[in-house]
Image 1 (cartoon, each protein chain N blue to C red):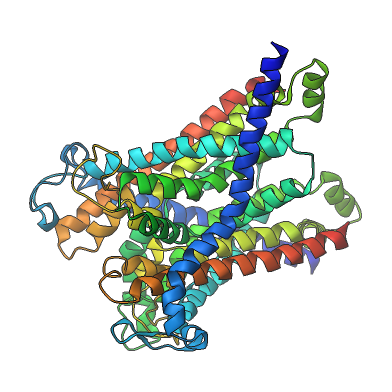
Image 2 (cartoon, each protein chain N blue to C red; image 1 turned 180 degrees about the vertical axis):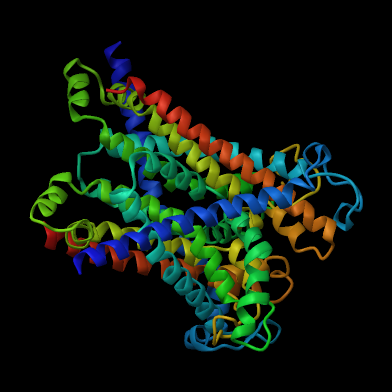
Length: 297
Length: 279
């Protein structure tokens, strides 16, 4: 009886240890898998050309990713610029100012909306954001716009990541001890001063973590962006220019990638570039967070 | 001066919160109002008939069933892998050992990796083994996508279980495996939330299944056949120039939204109900 229990214990331990080790290796495996498939194109085209050339002519073997990489940065940048102030202010309001009833109502709502699939946000963008930009916004600034542009992509992404950021920020703010706020208030600080000098300072690591997560999400978002950014291979020069972010490139061309030589390899390379950027970004922010937490401790 | 600043920022914050709530309501309202007019019983009960994509009869039952197959399959498979991992780092391994920290770090990274990268990776595996787009490939790829979600969510809950509980079970002579079962029992509400969270993510994801599950007008009868999914059904129909097909995309979007919202509400409800008897 005891022996049986010990054997089960050992067995379960072995299985779960193996699975854990496997999952640690899966990060490596992902990188290696994508790398092996992108080697053919890496052999043909020099890395500098891949990263810095804007010439994209798969039929002629020219694979310059610069336009796509810049397109990705454009939509992500716009999305963050819109989403950050809104979600920060709104999270502060919900956590520090809002009456209890309102909070009980709005927090579950934001939770639910954080779960709406990207494709729905994309559909909404096509229905409302595109016509709005085309008819009301763009005519004030440029001669002609179809509405399908990096701004539309940025707006849709922003709305998609706002519930995500608010969600995390509320959790972060909840960990700040009540006594700290009370000490600040009792010293005569106004509520806003308390927010500025106690709450925000205390939650800086959490805020950074939320931004990192939201950026990663916006950076790799595919379908929503594909539906609204216009998919034109060019480097956007204004927010009303169409763009073609990396994830959209991969998704839009999966159909004919096997019919043009090296094309499938180039698309896998695009995925590898996304993968590397995300890992670098997460790694660096980890370091920053680590430093910050050490400073605060 | 200080008073003015306070009032100004408070007004700004209320404005932002109202704007966010407004936009989110606007999204739901847009989807519902545009989708409801094309929603019919045929949409949810029939597969596409000949000429469906030029506006003739049929529905998207193939995509609904396909999405359910892939989601359920990947959540079950994901649980089989993630539960042992979570138990290992919380019960078996030494607290704060290198492996535990490394595992948590890896899952943080995996969590941030976009679904299109998983899709591409799934594709490279399929090419390696010479497989075609199929239900199985879709399930495996979506499983990769949701394992980090499951592990992180369950790990967070399991870390909250008081250490005393663990000590008590050990002192009663339990093995680590038996202790793990006790911890698992304690974390049931959290596990359920994690499951529903990953359910929502899996059913709404398009980029993963695009390469791996493919698309088909029929309902798959075995795991080596391609399968349609709801997000892709929306995407393909929206790209059509024909008005009626586009309208069906809106109806499909409504179906997906309702599914996800119901799942979300269920998560909230059960999460509350099950955590009543928690220590």
